[in-house]
Image (cartoon, rainbow over all chains, first blue to last red; front, side):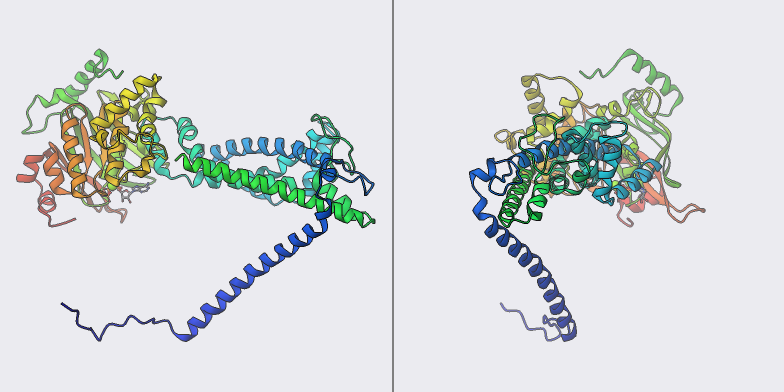
Amino acid sequence: MSIILDPSVSLTSTVDGKRRRKDMLFLALLWFGILLAVVTLVVLLVDTFLTGRSRLNWEFLSGHTSPFAEDAGVQSAIFGSLWVVLPAGISSLLIAIGTAAYLEEFTKPESKVQAFINLTIQTLAGVPSIVYGILGLAFVARGPLDWGFTVRTASVVLAMMILPVMIVASREAIRAVPSSYREGAFALGCSRWQCVRQQVLPAAVPGIATGSILGVSRALGESAPLIMLGALAYVSSNPTGFGDYYTVLPLSIYKYATEADSEFQYAAAGAIIVLLAMLLVLNFTAIVIRDRSRKSL
Amino acid sequence: MNETTTPTAQSLIASSLSKGDGNIPGVNSGRAAQIVMEARDLSVYYGDFLAVRQATFSIARNEITAFIGPSGCGKSTILRSLNRMNDLIHSARVVGTVLYRGIDLYGPLADPGEVRRRIGMVFQKPNPFPKSIYDNVAFGPRVNEKFTKSELDGVVEDSLRKAALWDEVKDRLKASAFSLSGGQQQRLCIARALAVNPDVLLMDEPCSALDPIATGRIEDLMREIKSEYPIVIVTHNMQQAARVSDMTAFFSVESTGDTNRPTGMLVEYDRTVDMFSHPHDERTLSYVSGRMG
Ligand SMILES: Nc1ncnc2c1ncn2[C@@H]1O[C@H](COP(=O)(O)OP(=O)(O)OP(=O)(O)O)[C@@H](O)[C@H]1O
Ligand SMILES: [Mg+2]
């Protein structure tokens, strides 16, 4: 048995040369963009690593931040960052999940409440971080709360700063949960709250984890508002409570980098490497959480 | 767990029956006493759009009721208004009465959650939760009541047996529900619906994504459980309606003057044998004999 060739059928491409050239050009532009991003990143990383390499030792990690080049370390900055960023991340995450769940599951899409909150969140997400610093200075560090230049003040202000991003990320994640899960849960007699608690939120965990890491990373890398909030340049001890004074890694990097002595450049590069490592750990945690909850599906 | 007849419910049924027309011409008069649900002049709107107007029918114990009719005539809409799943669509509005054992489903005495637990639903597309097979079936019992581990095991096994799935999954209850085939997933969804011990089961085209063998199994299953659970099934498959159902409701669409979107309506509601052998309405005749839709 054989099939007879049908001369009226052609399987060759009907795309003409001009369009093909356009496709090629577009592809080339894409590659250029990718290369630019990757090369810049690699150059920066390699340069920082080469500069800071000499400082990557136990003395540097365990030493506190100091105005003397040979003593300069990062321990108090690492712990300062953790003390400030972790509570900020956790509290804003909880508030963000609550807000997102309320908006997505309990309000009507076209309601006035939702329109108003949407506008507020979008506006807040675009506010420069220094403005949060000024706000914190006026209302938290001084003014009505009067908490002074403490870990608590910094943490609260950073939490406010990343809240909009966290809300947007959580909403996206919740919206991506298939509505068939909700229908299934409701059809079994679940109340709205049970449905959210038992089906929607667990299914949204991977998305929330990935999205909120953006917020926490931003808080970890932020220095501008903390300068307003009295983060110290050099601190010779770790914070032991929320009422302590503090410094954070980005601020130490800034201080070291602006010192005249070239020894400090190495310290700045070393601190950058430490900050990058912390960001990596953070991202890795998010990936682990995401994969864990995916696997349990 | 699930008290099927309470004195109050009985007396309410009696009072509702004296008003309503539970009796269908040509259907044995004993049916009236078996009626579990009744829809009277049930209309559903989506916003201003009247999707279905004034449907009146009843659902009795020991019966499978089939909803048939062309696409868009409002079969799913009516089905979803029988267990208040329409509440979840913000624009949907129900007018008319649905009585469940004499109680107004949309009245102040009916809690939507409890309504949906008693009147279970299986969807067109199998929609297992992203959990294990066991947890899918155990989900409903867990949120509705407190069970010990062994009681829960019993409920899960029982439901899976009723859904004719137990033998296929008993060795891998902890496996993801997504590892099942489409037909198995649909039977899992049936088991999940049965696990909360409902009183009525609503099925919206449960076999439309399945092959003939899986379809056959689900039809067998429906026949087996109909003595315990009255079933309402939406289907596009005439043979299926003829094979499994005792009563048939034929819906169609008509264009009313003011809007150009056609409104669905219940054209004919009768015993399946009568409906398919000598329908009263011209439209039913053309539909069941395959000339339209
Ligand atoms: N959520 C909704 N919002 C607005 N209109 C809707 C909605 N759901 C259904 N409709 C409309 O209501 C009418 C009936 O729809 P329904 O889904 O009940 O039809 P159906 O008989 O189940 O059709 P099919 O056989 O294709 O499933 C259609 O005109 C449809 O466009
Ligand atoms: Mg439908």
